[in-house]
Image 1 (cartoon, rainbow, N blue to C red):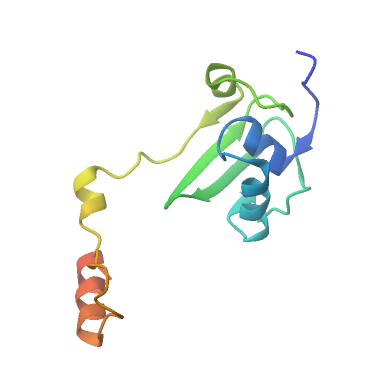
Image 2 (image 1 turned 45 degrees about the vertical axis):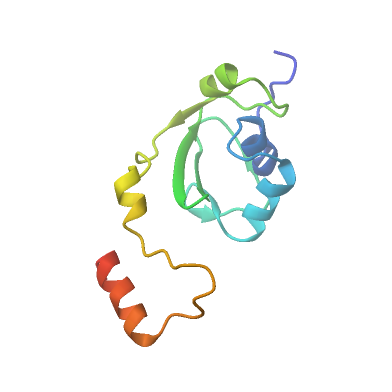
Length: 124
């Protein structure tokens, strides 16, 4: 492919393999500390190469992927799947996701009792 390179910016690679919807969201995740490359916090311009492990905390879950092929242009989902090895834990089931404490709109801040109940529910 003409868009293959030996290294690429981590934010561009995350966007290219469809882990983030936009490159600016990928860069914002890097600046917020939600992206790690080989265990170290990554800035948006940090380069990735084949074999690097990228950890991305996105939408409430951690994605752990290994770079198999470096690309810099956004590609279709089948091609993007070939560019990485997904070692992420499975997403939580609906019952696990529903077990988190959700509050009704307009009920205000949780009281100390409410916080204790939420911590107990989460298993802390």
